[in-house]
Image (tube, rainbow, N blue to C red; front, side, top):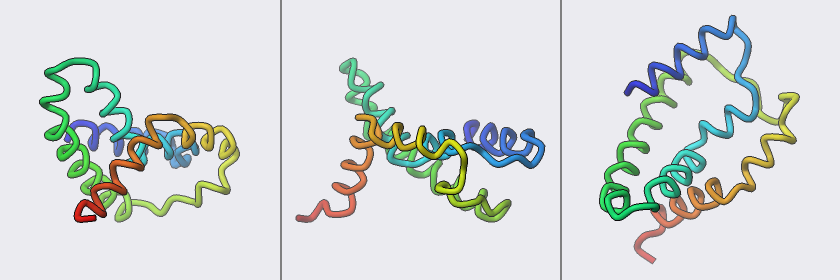
Length: 110
């Protein structure tokens, strides 16, 4: 919950300036989950706590998106000036790993 409060505070302290494209990509659930999985995969204890961390991150993300959608309407990410740099973040291994996890969670029964 502290990261939700931090995100909202950061959003309001930018003097009504919109978040840049790189920050928006880093706030995607795929990026967060991929980064979490890479960080936790370095130790046995990390592997044990990984499912709980993933569930907590997904819950936090859902709350965050509800709050931000109520507060402000952000412009499309394609219209931001640093969109091309943000595409580089989407091609990182962590982002792709998070996308694969989300796709696997959607079709776990297959």
